[in-house]
Amino acid sequence: MTEQHRFTSIWDAIEDTPQQAASMRARSSLTMSLTEAIRQQGMTQAQAAALFGVTQLRISDLMRGRVNLFSLDTLIDMAAAGMAPTIHVSKPKATPPARRATRKTLAHA
Image (tube, rainbow, N blue to C red; front, side):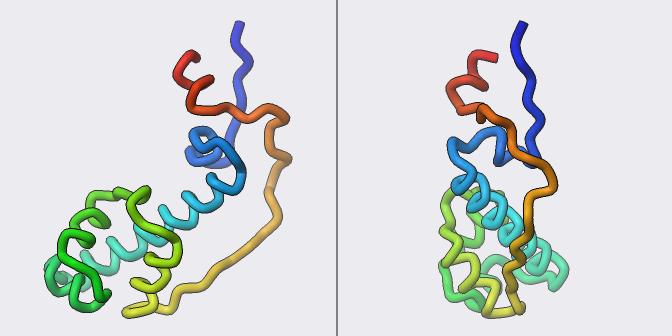
């Protein structure tokens, strides 16, 4: 019988380290916020690209949720162009599992 783990987020389950998971959670959150702002304001990808100082192709990647293609710095810089990004750090709600699943172990589950 396989042992089941509960994870705080999908990133905790698929990333190899807590640091990688935290980075992906932050990047994902910023990506969703930027995408929502673009949609709410009815901007075209070209307009969003001009506002955020990136190419239209980068906005396309953003809108498609390709979180892994963006650094945290890049997303913060983009958000600062039209929003007021902040970072919130808190203590974990629960103790993380003693043994973390890796991509390799998840593939064999």
